[in-house]
Image 1 (cartoon, rainbow, N blue to C red):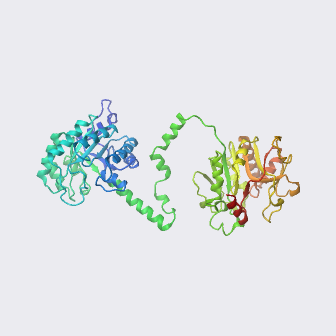
Image 2: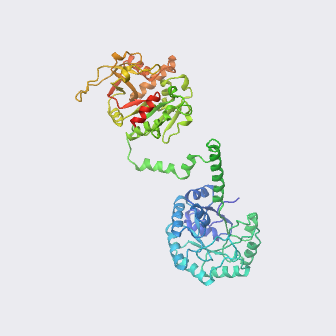
Image 3: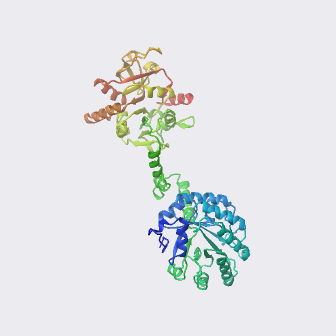
Amino acid sequence: MATKLDGAPEAPDGTAAALSKAGRLRAALQAPGLAFVMEAHNGLSAKIVEEAGFAGIWASGLTMSSALGVRDNNEASWTQVLDMLEFMADATTIPILVDGDTGYGNFNNVRRLVKKLCQRGIAGVCIEDKLFPKTNSFIGQGQPLADIDEFCGRIKAGKDSQTDDAFSLVARVEALISGWGMDEALKRAEAYERAGADAILIHSKQRSADEILGFAKEWAGRSPLVIVPTMYYATPTPVLRDAGVSLIIWANHNLRAAITAMRETSRRIMEEQSLTSVEGAIASVKEVFNLVGQGELSRAEQRYLAPVADGPHAIVLAASRGDALAPLTEERPKCMLDVRGQPLLRRLISTMNACGVRDITVVRGYRKEAIDLPNITTVDNDAYADGGEAASLACAAERLRGACLVSYGDILFRNYILENLLAADGDIVLVVDVRLRDGGHRAPGRAVDAVRCSRRFTGSYLDEEPVTLSEIGGGLAPETADGEFIGLVKLSERGSALVRDELDAMRADGTLDGSDLPELFARLTTKNVPIAVLYITGHWLDVDDAFDLAKARNLI
């Protein structure tokens, strides 16, 4: 099927594109070839029409009204239509011919309509010789028509009001639709041409094109002829071209196609309560971004926005199930358990966001599909059952670059703790609570990550002497420990590189899969890598069992 405005005269520089939008539509109407325009009803569908290769858009009154959820009876005001047209014109570079219904009133309404359309870069308008408010041509029988002289006044008023000399006004003849016969249709078309119409649209709702072909023969090319073959769509296009038709409008098919697709997609999602069967059959979110020009905005941001210093990003280790919380974790990992109306992980991410950390990668494992929070990047550790935290961190090794936070996925803490950590000096800084929970004696399988440091916590605000890690691990005796590692670490660019290199070394010597984070940091201390400690005094918790979950709900 041809999709372009065939035969449009070239501009002086040899390209049709050099003409204005109105100039290109006028050229298409006056050219000897047959042109095609396609229906659109909003900015997105207009972009799709242009993307398909059509060089013109039909802004349909029926489909714009339907897209707003109202009837095609002027229930959408002309200013609402004008707002929609502005979005469509801004979104595309091809001409738009607007379905202007009856002109929304008498000659005075038409004058204002045409002025506003020209201001918004619309190429032309089609007005029909019926009464305001209009009724769609395919509804009912024998709709009343406007007085010929009165409608000619609307045409003259529109032409006198256009501010773009190339703007086109198409007069739509409804005599055949309303059963007034061929003679009346020709009489009206002749009067409208004399009044200044740039083209005549002859309409029919018969399933054959006999009326249209008969009119075209009698009209004999006195001015450009426009048709809308919605009902007589089976007529071969060459027949219409040979009849001297200048422009064919495909009038409502994008909206109708969208209704079919949306109904089927909604039905399947409702029945299946899943997106699995539809996700591969619909446009991707990336396609939506491409259509609306997201890439252009990104390029503009690089050009016009002042450079922003890169803030820290975060890696959250959330691959484990949380066996001690069974059966609550039968369908989801413990990081997605509800804590006062929000998943535990969402609360952790909200704390990070509030402190300016917005680039967050979550390492998933058990029931990974349940971790579907917005604005995060996910990395999967499908071997989560056979490995520890170090193996999960290694899955996100590519993200271990620059300033970086590493956090367990089952902890909560007050904002000030993260704010103090972000302000702390050091290539690797661990957060340590000086108050070992339960005196360091936990239930079997729940060992405390006890630490010994270069000096104990003094509690003095005047004490600014740096503290470094000496030993870390569950094997430390509680009475000799200086605190407990809470599962939150800050790394500088150098610190990220050190951790990344150590993960490689652990992979090489076969210890990676069975190691947790304390073992990773213990290896670094044995290599004399300085690890700083930020002491805190409570105001955090981790969730290991139902008792911890209850505490979390009380804390929130």
